[in-house]
Length: 385
Ligand SMILES: Cc1ncc(C[n+]2csc(CCOP(=O)(O)OP(=O)(O)O)c2C)c(N)n1
Image (tube, rainbow, N blue to C red; front, top):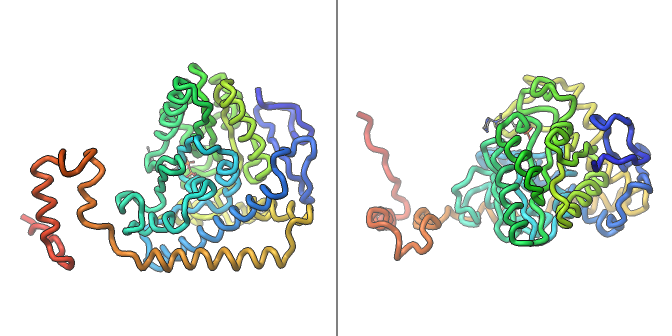
């Protein structure tokens, strides 16, 4: 089992023990702090955490202003996607659930293309076909967030099996929320990953709520991590708001997968500070007191405190960074919002390998009809019978 006798473990019961590295005073446990988290990586991690925090906030405002249709923020859960982006290597693959879209930003996906996906316009690599926030990026090996809860896990395990069969030293990262662990897909993925020792890291972000259903109503298991142990997968329960701890656990898990030692299951204990999505009002099912208690454990604040403790960040650095990131996001939004809709003809692309030679005659006809419409024409719906 990965669950190991670290000095910072708070409870000797392996079902509930929570791995942490950061201490309340901002220092880190030297015995467990990963050596690869150099000052440079820590600074980069903080930059990505702040950028994501500001980006999510901006996108939620745009939705409220009616400028985008939908957004799924991960406020309060930034440590897991940012640590994943830092740990993942170029050829690894990422299969996100609802809170990990930003992994691709850490892996070099352009901010403008990311924002354009939310607008679904001509700058969107998915040509406006996916729901906003359901990001995907082939260049950074990230598969789309699935609206259905759970299927990305069998996909992640399947991709891992392909890597194994091809003897690629790559890792597949699959994500889910606590609610998704009640889905059959979760169990199929865990069973298969364990039985065939797939090089996969399955991460459950336990943010305590599946929309309005609290975790204690979701499952009778004592923790989520114990479910991995039942399948015979080394499992670890980590403080999901402690970037250093999450990084360490993911780095170890990816190393195991790369060395052919099989899957790891991670329960990252965290909290969704904001709404489930812009379609949700969490004040209807949870108390302000609960939210306020978790705000005190904010992952971005905790990393900032650590950087201040190490002398790597001052108040003026923080202000300057926020100013710079806010301007970067504002510029991206301004540029993207000015883009037009995706070209009409793009509707007919991507289903057939080469559009002109293989597109069936009826679709060719429809494409010609669509292209013949003047730019401002609207296709009128037929009158109701
Ligand atoms: C198969 C399926 N069932 C139900 C839904 C509706 N739904 C969307 S998100 C969600 C909750 C997901 O909770 P969790 O897995 O804990 O992830 P979180 O949103 O907390 O990150 C539900 C039930 C869905 N999208 N797909």
